[in-house]
Image (cartoon, rainbow, N blue to C red; front, side, top):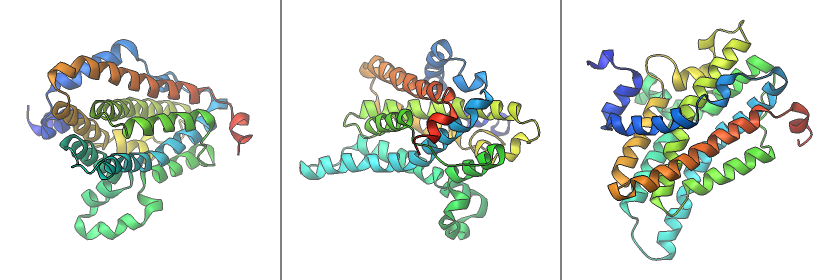
Length: 271
C-alpha cells in the first residue's frame, strides 16, 4: 500500500515503526470491553454545557500535567545522585512532543515553517485548549473551564500515573490516555455535530485538528505512545502492562461517563 493510500493512523504507525499487531491488540481490549464510548451515545441538552466546561478544563490542564510530571522523575535522580535512565528519557521525549503539539507548536510549524516560530507566542490562537474554547463559545455561548470535583480527582490521578516511578505505569498511562483520546474526541465531535445541525462539522477546529482532515494530530500521538511501549515493555511484562493499560483506560472512560451526566446547576454552584 502506498503512503497516499494509507489511513492517517496506518501512515503514522509506519513512520514511527510500530507493528500493527501492537495497535490491534490494544484496540481489541477497547472494542471488547469499552465500546461504544459514552460520548458516542450522544449528550442530553441539559448536560451539554457542564460536560464541555469540564472537558475544557481537562484540555487546558493536560499539557501542564504532562510537562510537570517530569519534575518528580528528575528530582528522584537529583536527590539520589544517579543518572537519568533511558526509560525516563523515552517517556519524557514523547511527553514533550505531546505538550509541544497541545500548545500549538506542531500545528504552527507544519503550516508556516520555521519562520512561523514566533506565532507560538500567540497562545490564545494556538493552544489546542483555546481552539476548543472557541468551538464551545460557538456552540453554547460561554466557555469557562470547570474543575469540578470529579474532574479534579481525575486529573490528580492522571498526574500520578504520568509521574509514576515505574516506567510500566507511566507508559500504560500515556498509551491509555492517547488511545482513549482518539475515540473520545471522535465521539464527542459526532455528537456535537448531530446536536447542532446549523454548524458545519469541519468548522469546529479543535476536533478537526485532532481527528479530522488529511493529516490529523491524534494518529501521531497514538503512534508515538505505542512506539514507546514497544521500546520499554519487555515480553515478560506484557501481561502486566495490559492489566495496567486497561485500568488506566477504564479510568478515562469513567471520567467521560461522569461528566456526561453532570447538571449545570452543580457546576455553577461551585464557582
